[in-house]
Image (cartoon, rainbow, N blue to C red; front, side):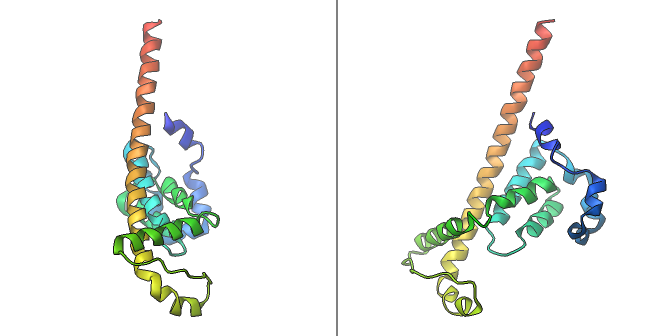
Length: 173
C-alpha cells in the first residue's frame, strides 16, 4: 500500500513544532487530518500542490500549505508536489504556459529575452502577461486534475493488489 511507503518520509509532530517557517500557521498545522494518508487526502494534496506549482510567484510552498489547511488534505504531499517546478524545470514549464496562453487567445508568440529586473517587468512582461497567466492557470488546472485522477487510480490499484495478496494468503492456510 502506498501508505507504508509515504509514511516513512512524513515527519512527526515533535519535528514539526521545531520548524520555524511553519509557525505562521499556528497550531492548525498539527491537526491529525493534515498528516493522514488515505486516498482522499493524498489525491487532494497532489491536486493542490500541482496547481500551486504553476502559480508564477515565489513561496509556492506556502500557498500549497495554506491550500492543504483549507481543504484538509495531506500537508507534506501538497507542499512536496510543488517542487515539480524547480530552478531546472521552471523555464520550459513557464514557456509552455506562455505558448498555451497565446494559442488560446489567438495571439502571436512574442520573442522576448528574459531578465529578472524591474525594467523588464515594466516593459516586456506587460506585453505577455495575459497569455502567460492564462497558460499558467490552464496548465495548473490540467495538471491538478491529472494528478488527482492519477493518484486515485494508483491508490486503487495498490489496494486491490493488497486485497488479492491477502486473499491468496488466506486460501493457502
